[in-house]
Each structure stands twice: as C-alpha cells, then as structure tokens.
Length: 109
Image (tube, rainbow, N blue to C red):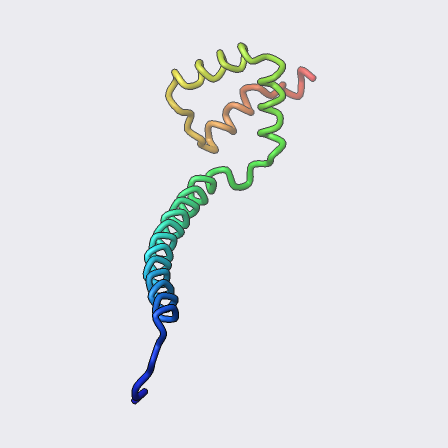
C-alpha cells in the first residue's frame, strides 16, 4: 500500500512521542468524562434538593440573615425550640380554625 517508507530516527522519535501522548490524552479524556458525569449527577441532586425551596423568595432568606445578625442567640433558641417539637401539619382546616379563633367578632370591633 505505502510501499517502502523511510523514516529517519529523529522523525520516528517524534512519531513515537506523539503516539504516547495520544494514549495518555485518551486516558485523561476518559477520566475527565467520568468526573464530568459525576459532577452532573451532583448538580442534578442539588437541583432536586432545591426544588423544595421553589416559590420562596430570596427576601425570606435575607430577613432570616438580618434577624440572625441582630439577635443570634434568640434565633438559635427559636430554632432549637422548633426542632424539638414534632413537625406541624399544613392542613387547610386547621388554618381556617386558627384564623377563626384569632379573629375579633364583629360586635367587639
């Protein structure tokens, strides 16, 4: 096909070095692709964990940090108190009952 090809020793050395670099590059590319896949899985996991915060405004977070700066001990106490109790159930009936219980009757206004 190519017939007799003469390659000088210097050229052969260059070709050999390029071939070695190609093998190393392929290994590096494979490793990097694996790392990218792992990072994409992490990003997907983070996106899923952030879904619970969807619809919550950043101002809520800012208010928390402002309160934390003003009264860190009180915020820590409130959080500790909340975490000791069982979670509240978000039920519309309970919310209506609470609103009803806290409202002032018309005759008393």
